[in-house]
Image 1 (spheres, rainbow, N blue to C red):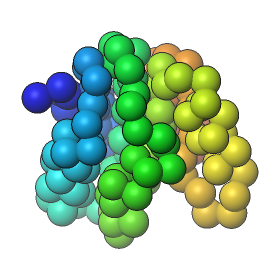
Image 2 (spheres, rainbow, N blue to C red):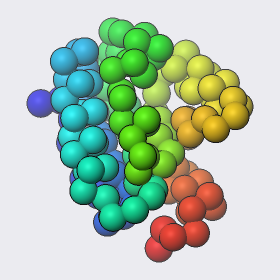
Image 3 (cartoon, rainbow, N blue to C red):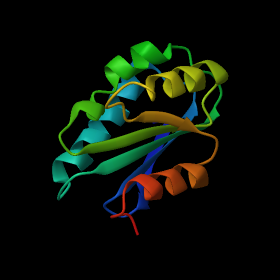
Length: 125
């Protein structure tokens, strides 16, 4: 499986590290894993950082990938932050982040993403 999902901060932030060349099926598996964590969450909000730093190629477009990523519509979903994504998806994510109620944004590093989440969610230790 070309991803590893762990807690960046227990019960607050899931870190998904992607590897290689992800397919639609694998992105769906990532989403299913995130949805399982959201179902188990004790409250709002559970945030997700998706790290693309070790992805060799991203063969599908971000719009299509976001349709596969259904977790953002879950009642316990917080922010989804893309890290290390190619320029096109990064620009699109940052444009989407300007829309009302959008919770998608791109950051350069995982540390920067965690700092951002701490600035918008006072419950994160």
